[in-house]
Each structure stands twice: as structure tokens, then as C-alpha cells.
Amino acid sequence: MPIIEIVSRSPADTEAVGRALAERLLPGSVVAMYGDLGAGKTAFVRGLGAGLGVSGVKSPTYTIVDEHIGGKMPLFHFDMYRLSGEDELFDIGWEDYLARGGVCAVEWSEIVPEALPADCVKVRLEKDLSDENIRKITLEGIVW
Figure 1: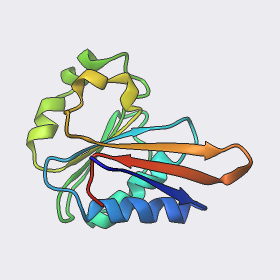
Figure 2: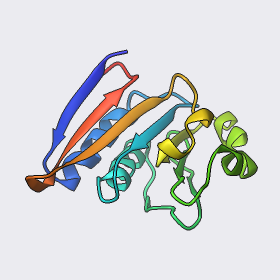
Figure 3: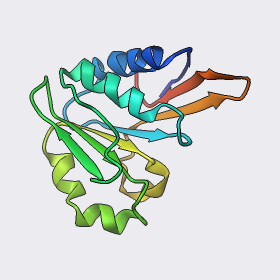
């Protein structure tokens, strides 16, 4: 699959990339996100939600998963930061979410690598050290 690199100059740019990706996703898609704290993962998912027709996306750090229903398809927003690995993810019903026909957006995917399907879309967000507003967004596994 091709690898696409996009430069974001603001949170609005990052959200726009998420919106554009949403148009290319199918029911059951998994979007695996990687990036440090403050890299823009939640902004990206806000855009993804907007592209799917849902609002109210925020970081689900304390709930592990937020469900957004009512758009073109459901958005299940996962934050793996507080999990110790795949076992905890499966305990909260990961397989059920995969089967529900929505989009699973997964922050901190590096914590649960074995749980991610081989065909997931990988999104890496990297901060620019010389400008706090700039992010490099790398997308892998999607035809743009």
C-alpha cells in the first residue's frame, strides 16, 4: 500500500486530514494512530468524526472507548494509553466493536499491536521540533 505524507500547520489542518480519510473508510475499518502526547491524535479523530457525521469527539483516556453513533457509520474512539496490553483490550469487548460495522480509531496503537488487523490504516503524527504548530502526518494502508 502507498505511504502518504502530509504537513499540517494547525489543528484545523489535522482535522481536515481526518475528515478526508473518513470519506475513504468502509464499515469495519480500523485506524491505528501513533504519536507522542500532544501530537494531534485527538484532533485527527475529531476530523474523522466530522467526516463520518458525528460530533463531540474528545480524548477517551479515562473511559478507554467512546462510542459516537448517529453519523454515516459509528465511530468507536479508543485510547489505549492506560492499558497494559491486548488482554485488557479483549476483556472490554474489542472483537465486538470490530464486528459492529463502525470505524475503530485507536490512539496509542503501539500498546496493542497484536490486536490490530493486518489491513488497518496506520496514521503516524509527529511534532516538528522547530515549530510547535507543525505536524507531519503519515498515512499507510489507504489509497488516497
